[in-house]
Image (cartoon, rainbow, N blue to C red; front, side, top):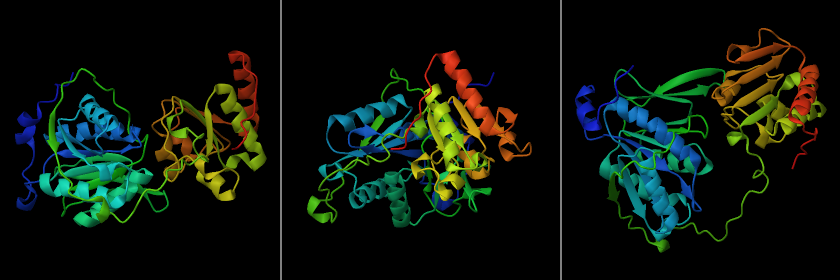
Length: 366
């Protein structure tokens, strides 16, 4: 059995000495994405990953909460302790009530310049991508976007891995000459940690923004939810059935929808299917679509390129159906069926319908 990790203070002497100009930079920071009263789950996923990185470095795990003075912000701060934060950096200001790039960039870059983290992680969401790029540019540091794996290398620096060349290769990127080392990670790439609601609070550090509303050019006049994708919950579904080009036509995706309906799950597809126009883009699974971590993933007629693999390999159980026994998807699937998906899918739907006592129904596209 491995020994429990030593406290951060006790581990500090274990790390390799950094170059002189990096020695003021310490700790792993996670930006807590709080928007319209809700924390995006990717923030807690990154807290779990950040804990591992901080333990390897022998430093503290820190959360950064930006928001207005309301109950949602106070709740977010309390939850950072439950998800493992040692320190929480807090900036509350009325200009941070809604996300706007200018005040959020000013707040986060101000905090970084004042307290000097060595690693800064953000979710690769619409908000996180916008903020991360702006902050990295302002700080003149490196940013690895859409990382699928984060590690600490033998030089005690961040090694961030992501797909490249259209998803055909994986590359590991190091920010050697600048700090902080920044990376964004998409939702569901990392596992969700269990919160410890009894964990004591850590240290709070308050930061004053000093930006007036009149200084911010962008104004929020109205918030309109994106109703076209609100019904698609691929990222957080427990069961997902997906189809690829092996299904041969758009009409055959009825078989995928039927099986998903019987199982009470969601349905999706691979990138070439989107490019063909057979399915809407919000149904795409993979590095350039949705990343999923279901309990069960059934892939029908999908070859399993790297771009797709990195979006699904966090699933508990992957069942692949493909006529090609050499298909790459069999390299990472837990169970493989070498057969025609057009025959297997209806048989599975009928069998599950009888077993579960459900009527087969078709999920219509919104």
